[in-house]
Amino acid sequence: MDSARALSDARPTPFWLEDPGRPEALPALVGDTTCDLLVVGGGYSGLWTALIAKERDPSLDVVLVEGNEVGWAASGRNGGFCAASLTHGFGNGLQRWPGELAELERQGAANLQAIEDTLKRYGIDAEWERTGEIDVATQPHQLAELHEIAEAVAAHGLELTVLDADALRAEVDSPTFLGGVWDKEGVAMVHPAKLAWGLKQACLGQGVRIFERTKATALAEHGGGMAVRTPYGRVFARRVALGTNVFPSLVKRVRPFVVPVYDYALMTEPLSAEQLASIGWRGRQGLGDSANKFHYFRLSADNRILWGGYDAVYPYGGKVREEYDQRPETFRTLSANFFRCFPQLEGLRFTHAWGGAIDTCTRFSAFFDTAYQGRVAYAAGYTGLGVGATRYGAEVMLDLLAGERTERTSLEMVRSKPLPFPPEPVRWAGIEMTKWSLDRADRNGGRRNLWLRTLDRLGLGFDS
Ligand SMILES: Cc1cc2nc3c(=O)[nH]c(=O)nc-3n(C[C@H](O)[C@H](O)[C@H](O)COP(=O)(O)OP(=O)(O)OC[C@H]3O[C@@H](n4cnc5c(N)ncnc54)[C@H](O)[C@@H]3O)c2cc1C
Image (cartoon, rainbow, N blue to C red; front, side):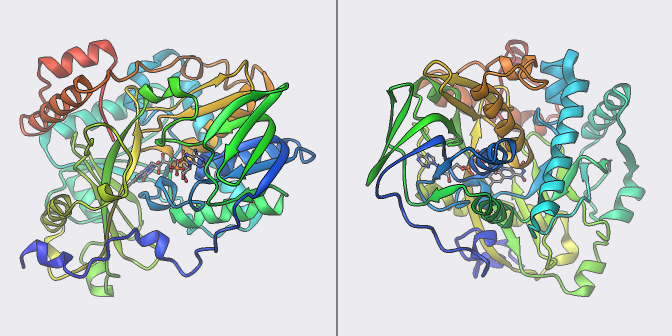
């Protein structure tokens, strides 16, 4: 079958957000209000910040404003790979913070466990499955790279299970798989939107006041605190935490550090028992291939396959726009690559096709800081691995607002910042050059050209 025909009934919307459990939006803020802490943004960053602030001090008056609906953006449309890594993977962490990577890994593992514990504590059903993730090689040079990573991980006292082609194909069967490494503990699969909605409910239960359809439009000092304008009112807050991710930051100097990179995903119809048996996948792990232009794929609770990644599209000018969420040429490529990976599923159809903006920064992992003499904190730049790390970012923002030195704020990773992106048109040209070079490296046994080697030396990069 022509793989494009498998897309003919695909709905142009994120599968996860179509759930019948999607809650009604809460009313917008009308008039003025005061609070101790204002959280801006109702994705994971904002929701975790509000919830943990209440857990740290139940007497704190916390308000959260969300410009659209809680969980509508990246938090409700991602792949649902919830990873312990705070550094966009071990390799990136090793390159940038070798001296503190063991500590970063320890704190990341504790963060992942804290997410699991929170879901239990509040009775949140987010289809959490601690299955781990298998990184697979589909080309010989990727196999060598995966083995190198596994050795480096072992040298840090951590463990990955190395799978040869037979062992891997006994887990998940694709003729394209040459081998892989399985991180059994460090990744869980989650229903991303249910995680956001569950956190919203937990926040409300702890007394957080949430206003949806309430965009914060301006931030200014006011007495010893801050005043934040919204369309129909104002919030006077002692402290403000910004969890606005890829959207233009209310602190203007943060904007050059983050660019939107559009990532796309497909969801299939549920697999029949025979179709599932033809792949195996009894361990229900998340999978990712190891190319620069990589795919990520996983099962949903009702045995659909989510298949995403590959193209990472930076729109010239760096705006976040709804029209970018649909990209038929990428969906066609994704569909063709899906059937190349799982030819035994020929005839399967896609029910959903969507995209979303990833908050990419040049070091691929979040950065944190304060503004307005410590009254405002922000965290951004998770670059496609924020499902778990946003909870950590929430803790960091609260540490910074409290002016506390903690195990988190002592880290170089937390204290330092990435290099900003240059302005247009150099930004677009640089990103396109990098994407072209990464694609070439994928087709060329992984060999990195002079451009990529120079970026590596400067600690700069582009990823999704
Ligand atoms: C297609 C896709 C797949 C992904 N897959 C994965 C994955 O498998 N694993 C992983 O770890 N990560 C993944 N990510 C990344 C992950 O989803 C994000 O890192 C994470 O959701 C970021 O959460 P957040 O709360 O910071 O941002 P968001 O979810 O974007 O939330 C920010 C919120 O702030 C609101 N906002 C912005 N400005 C204002 C304002 N001025 N006033 C009021 N509200 C405002 C927005 O409306 C939005 O709701 C993926 C992302 C995409 C797009």
